[in-house]
Length: 178
Image 1 (cartoon, rainbow, N blue to C red):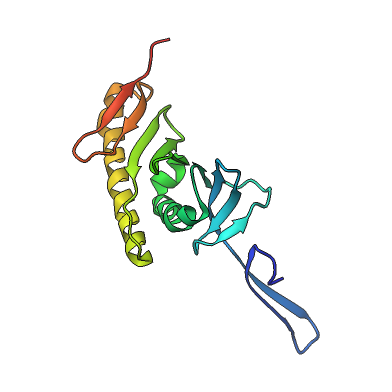
Image 2: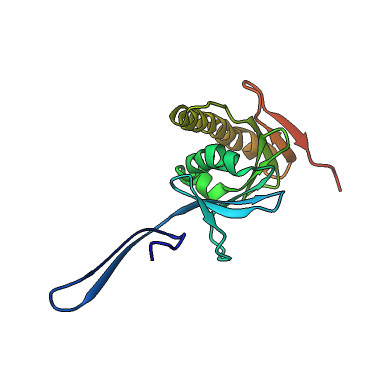
């Protein structure tokens, strides 16, 4: 059981009355990675790679130019920041990494792409996790305010692209008329 890539801990014992007890702790996937170079795997809640089980789960999917190192060090903490907020856990369905490592988010509601820019970098894991968490909190708060005060007035399907990359401004691209 311990050799299974989906099992975190396994404990097996026999009770005095002859029953065999098995206690398992499952590894919890946080995000699915589907990179352009063909990699297809999950990351668990400890930033470790889990193989694709060919079982579809309701997780955020990250696509694009993602190396395993970038996934474990940046996409994983970013996904955790999204999953820690009930609004964004239900609203964000996809993370897309562009060739320059800037990040786009695909929401469940609305028909637009949200550009948030490049994640802050650090060579230290704790600092990187903190920086990415703060970055995501700031960007998602700005997006929530734009949803409340901008899109509620203009209409949810007015824009095809929302760019939050730069502080103190939100750049939107209108949808082309059909």
